Length: 151
Image (cartoon, rainbow, N blue to C red; front, side, top):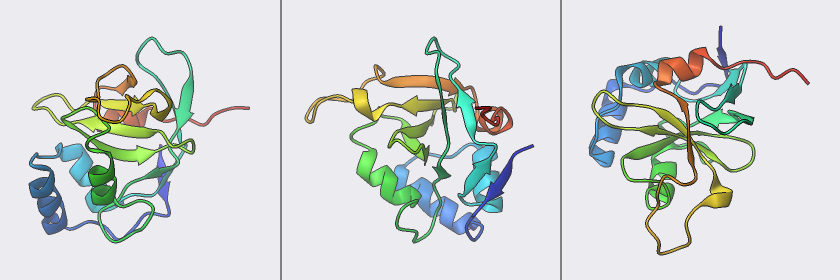
């Protein structure tokens, strides 16, 4: 069971709707429920493995939130990264190394992916999927599969 610590004031339906209008896309219901309950925060446990052929792991440093927070603002991250991550994705969290956890916003396909900033395309080039790795098929699966890294 995942616990979310340092969560923010729950997002309202209006805040979620305003964000959806801003990004011109709907959010999956499981992610909306997360925003309405926690609106960001740090998960415990926080580690995840990649679903793809990449055989390392990472951890969620912080989920992004709707609101005025300086370092975890969902809209700010969206605006800062929308031309750096592939089209049709939004950032939902980051790891401690400056990489993003991003969510695909397709009807019936809201996979969660890891975006590796070390391998991003050069400025002026269109972002592609070469630095993006599948983590999970949905937000719920992502949350439910987080685990505690044993050192």
